[in-house]
Length: 174
Image 1 (cartoon, rainbow, N blue to C red):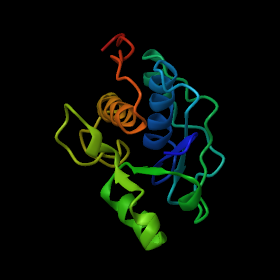
Image 2 (cartoon, one colour):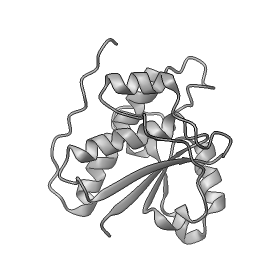
Image 3 (cartoon, rainbow, N blue to C red):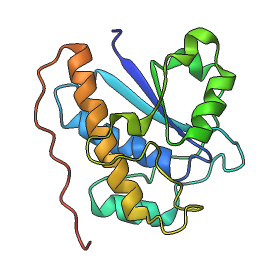
């Protein structure tokens, strides 16, 4: 595995789920022995929100759990990203299939659903809290934290690093 290993988190607009996954993965990796060996970024499959900050609701919830999304700005994935990143994590099946359509056969193997790495939740996608009835931003973050922990554990195995316990930040005001 090449170092730095590069991960791209992808949702539709890059203003809620994928920037949250980026921030959570960065935090978990910075607290592990993989610090400095893995880079994480995020993008959207659609470009209508390019340059915008993450949704204020998810920023507040993430901040309360120790994640900072304030510097992340929405960007659209480009075909060149499919070459530059080693692992591309889609938040849902719609974005997964959009990515697969963009990709060459060789690039398709890099694309996975984030929830494939979940250890607690059984869902295969992180629903968009904008459109999923009854889906809260808190639950979105819960799901992303669970799957991100699984990603980091898998990377420990793949990179051959010693697995260490990953502690998620304590929740406040749930």
